[in-house]
Image (cartoon, rainbow, N blue to C red; front, side, top):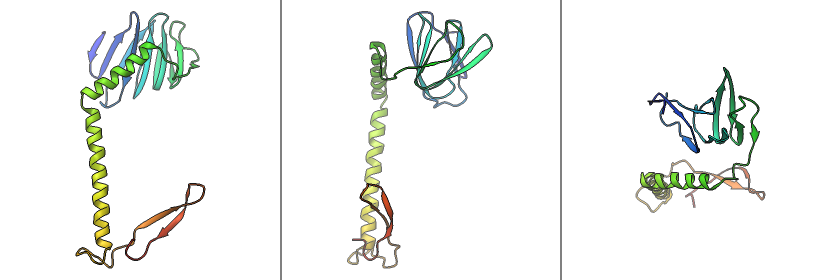
Length: 180
């Protein structure tokens, strides 16, 4: 590690490989990796793999900016570039073609997300959203039911979409009456 400041973290990869995921959740931060004489910045969200021998960058998602000898080049998702020869054109690669290290890295990220409670929080939020939608539907049904104490004869009619034969919305229709 060259610097460990949160606003400008700099790391040099000397051997092996590294998979780096940047989620962009903390604003005004930067991550720069030095590989094979090139500086690679991850400006926003992204998922990149770096290999030290031979120096190579693969961008699975997002983008990375490479700087070498004063020249810069952006490398987008699904592109790979050799870092030893300087900044030149990136080549396409199949992001589904992964090796054991990539699979291990993916499983590790999923396991860490599970341990951090992220998956639990997302599932809980999804259940709360579904419960809220069911409650809103039930309340609207009560407002439209003439037998309910919450009945409102002047409540606006709900807007409904009908789906045409091709599966696309065919227009907007208004429901009148009790909403049934």
